[in-house]
Length: 215
Image (cartoon, rainbow, N blue to C red; front, side, top):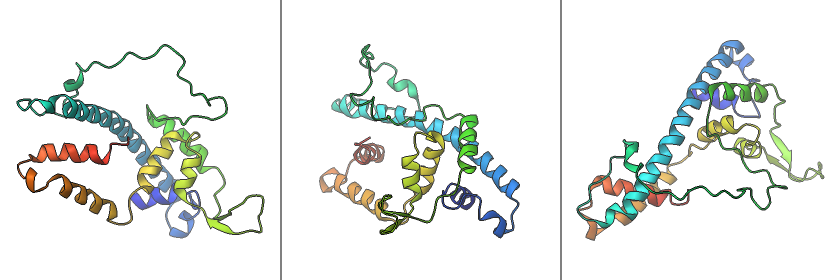
């Protein structure tokens, strides 16, 4: 199923490969729709849990960690951050200075299964992207570059916010172990010779914040 979804969500192929594979097109598309519904539910849950986890870690590091006798918070219980005082939302208009000329990206706050299926029907019935495109659209006789699936989903994030998020998770899987090695290198910098008594759960929290501090 992983390969089926990857081929379907590749704008260069979509469903053009199904006939030559010997599979039934209706059965493949039905299975992909069902999997997209499951992924949309998981995406909504993942988005909520990630926010809770990130807030819990920041509260622990900047407040609780200063007290040596403070207990490590349980990240599985969202109630740990219920008493955190957050600034009230501003009553002023939150629109960007350039909002009249630049469309802000639509974030999938609520990944409803019906919404992702609506996006999928629009996407699957559109014309396939070519394998290559001109570097300069005004010069079709000039050099060409390959069409990248991730670039397509980035350019169409406002049209397919939920389907695009699922596609980015799928196509964002690293093809090498370079990112894993960088995480291990960061862990070795944290767990130095003077920090050999650091607890595993604390190391995990520090490593998580270090690798996600730009979010």
